[in-house]
Figure 1 (cartoon, rainbow, N blue to C red):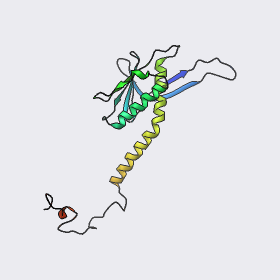
Figure 2: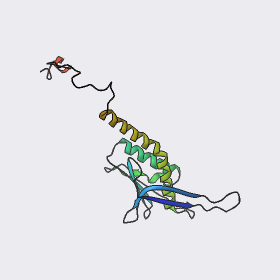
Figure 3: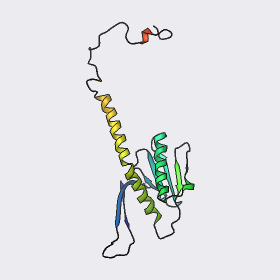
Figure 4: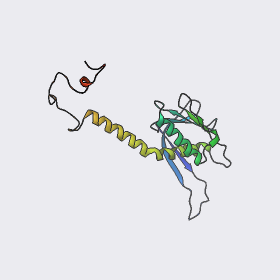
Length: 176
């Protein structure tokens, strides 16, 4: 179930400039303790804890290099946009989690809305990566299930022989 968030910007209403409404959609849920869990990324799950003002990420399936790279890209993005403080980024434990602290706002900004909007923009930047990964996996599956004529052999096309391949030509353990 997607959570839709609308952000009304506070700007002086003039004839030339009117306030913008920012709208975006995320596949997110609230936990019992009020944390917002976002499941849109292909490699990581993102959690924003408004009570402690922390952004956390966890590996979705298994911990690998692409998970760490996604976490690193996200926290770099959030750091460069001033959403989290650079010196608070921590991580690398056995569960593949990383976390960072959201600073207290100096103006009347709602940190939850800013964090959610920033995560949404990051996910939008990552969308081409998701599409490439999905297309690659689909192509890999198609190659295995329905190979081309050059990559397949019809039944009975290869003649039988007592010994085939290079295993019998080797000396040593495999020479049977």
